[in-house]
Figure 1 (cartoon, rainbow, N blue to C red):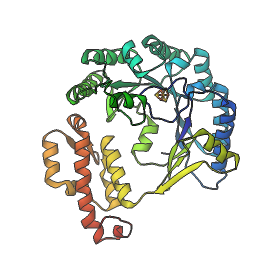
Figure 2 (figure 1 turned 180 degrees about the vertical axis):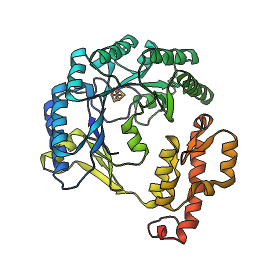
Figure 3 (figure 1 turned 90 degrees about the horizontal axis):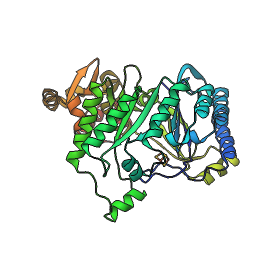
Figure 4 (figure 1 turned 135 degrees about the horizontal axis):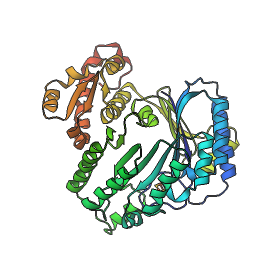
Length: 397
Ligand code: SF4
C-alpha cells in the first residue's frame, strides 16, 4: 500500500480544541491550489520512483472549502506525476457546515469516492462548546446529501469525554450516528492540546475535564454499542462495517510509506519522516523559489522503527509476528513470555492469523499495555541486537 496525503489549510472558523494547522481566512484559494500543484510537480520531477498510490486523503483544515474545480486540477496533477492504482480510495474530509449537493456532486465527479464528516456530536450544546459551525440537523443532512451525490462510503468523526456530555447524551450521539447507516465511525476522546483556546480555558479553571472513569465508560459504551450494530473495531478509535476499513489509515498503521503535500503535511518515505512548513507564507515562499517546502526531516533509527511499528500495529490490527521477526530479529511471543500468557488469560490480547492483537477488553487498557509491551521488546532487542547483525543499526546499548 502507498498513500498520498494532501493538507488544505483553511477553515471557516477555528474550533476551540483543534491544533491542526489551518487559518480562518479563506482567501487566495486559487494561488494556494497553484502552489499545491507545483509542489506535486516538484516531487514528481525529483526522479524518485514511487509505487502506485492505493489511497489519497484530503485532510485539513477543511478541504470542502475548496470548490470542486480545484480538486479536479489537483487530481490531474497527481495523475500526471504519479502512478495511481485503478481501485484507489480517495477520501475527502468535509465540515457539514460547508457543503451543498452541488459541491458534493462536483467532488464525486472529480474522483472522490469516500467522505469523512467531522460531526463530533449530535447535541447542540456540545457542538457549541467545541465551537463547531454546524448543527446536528446539518450533520444529518450532510450524510443524506452525500448519498444523493452518489457516495456509498461515508465516515463520521465523533468525540466523547466532552465536559457538557453525559453518558446518556453520548449514547444518543452513537445512536444517531448508527441511524444514518454509514460505513465507518471514528470516536475520539477529547484531548486538551496545548496552545488551543480550550487548553487556555482549562488552565484558567473555566473548564473541568471529564473524570477518567466516565471517559472509560463512554469509550466502553462506544465499543459495545458499535459492535452490536455491526461496526467492527479495527483500531483504538476506528470502527467499520465489514470491508469498509479506511485504507489510508491502514497505510499509516502498517508502517507503509506515504507522500504528503500542503502546509504542515507529514510524509514518510524510505525510512525518513519529513514535514512541510506549518505556515502558509513560508510554504508559498519555498515553492515560489522552486524548492520543496520541507521544514525538516528525520531518518528513523532501527530502534525508533521498532517502537513505532509495535505501537501502531498493536493499536490497530495487531503486530505481524513474522514481519516483526524478519525486520527486527525479535520473536515477539517468546520475548513477552509469561506476561503474554497472563494477558491472554485475562482476555486482553490474542494471537490469530500470525498477529498479536488486542482483544476487546485490551482496548480499554491499551496505553498501559502498549507501554509495557514496548518496554519488554526494548529489553529483548538490547540482548539480541548486541550479538546480531541488527546491532550495527541499533541505538540500544
Ligand atoms: S473544522 Fe476541523 S480542522 Fe478546522 S478548526 Fe475545526 S477541527 Fe480543526
